[in-house]
Length: 221
Ligand code: GLN
Image 1 (cartoon, rainbow, N blue to C red):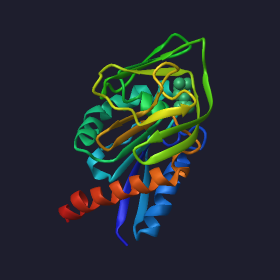
Image 2: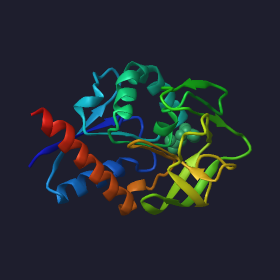
Image 3: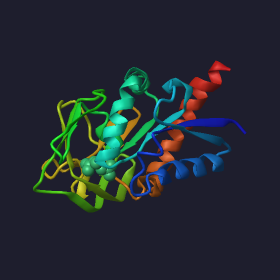
């Protein structure tokens, strides 16, 4: 069986509320489609070239873990930015999603420097921790999930598209009525649960991963 390579960024640090389940679900559906998968934990001090992989996953984390990751991840900014721009598939949840933007101001008053790849930023708001079930529509159909974050994410460009339109719950923040971000084949989302228990989204992502593998990696061989 051909092997799909998956990079799980900081798997040991960024994995709140079962986000690793997203990767397990991807591997399960890949197997059904006749593909093996190899998941590599790209953690502190590891070498990383995004283009060695067919899919990148970046899960959620507590503020403390995000502070640790922030000090390491800048080394990979360019390769991640190029990978995203090249229309390769990536899924970022909660803290991982926040990392795509310019910064995250935490409840501790600290500013975590993020990757500044996409025009968005995240700010803690003491009035509201956004916790509970979410329900929203996406281009792949409806999604039901769970959110738990203190950071409120705002887009800094009108061009940026959200991943979903809220039916209930908060999503990016209590004001905009939208959830996450979709840019090329990169999805950012506040949804834990994990998100990909919504098999409509999982199947769409697996299609993208297989197409990407066939176009880019098989062509190299
Ligand atoms: N620590 C971030 C926040 O509270 C992200 C939380 C998460 O990834 N679950 O907003």
